[in-house]
Image 1 (tube, one colour):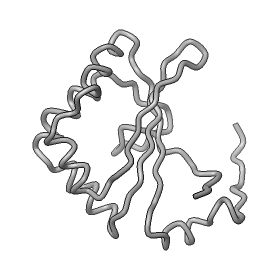
Image 2 (cartoon, one colour; image 1 turned 45 degrees about the horizontal axis):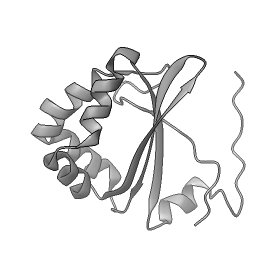
Image 3 (cartoon, rainbow, N blue to C red; image 1 turned 120 degrees about the vertical axis):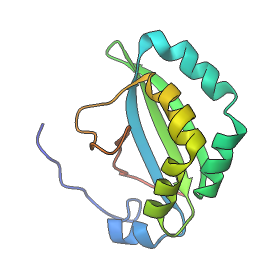
Amino acid sequence: MPQVTPIYGPTNPTPTQAAKASVKYYGSVIELKPEMEEKYRKLHSEVWPEVTAAIAKAHIRNYHIFVAELAGKRYLFSFFEYTGTDSEADFAGMAKDPTIRDKWWPLTDACQIRLPGTPTNQQWLAMEQVMHID
């Protein structure tokens, strides 16, 4: 598929403009293993307090995960807002949390199939923002 050049305007800020915003928006996608969907749904119906605390500590809020079926496969779509000033450090700190790293992610990662093009150090494939309206 050919690479499409981003088009920026009043409802799609440039990366520089987005970086200066007090709230940053993140969207990502991953495939859901059909045989693991029930387990994944159960885990997310009552997320552990340690996980929600680590998310809050990383300055993440308004976190959503959606599921959709496309061409016979199930996909998870994630969206959250980041309100901190150093996402790299905050996300790395979350990855060092023993509950997240050693307990939660092994359970949830086992339910997922990484998509082609996902960077080696990431589980979910980042989505590009093409519109933002407050």
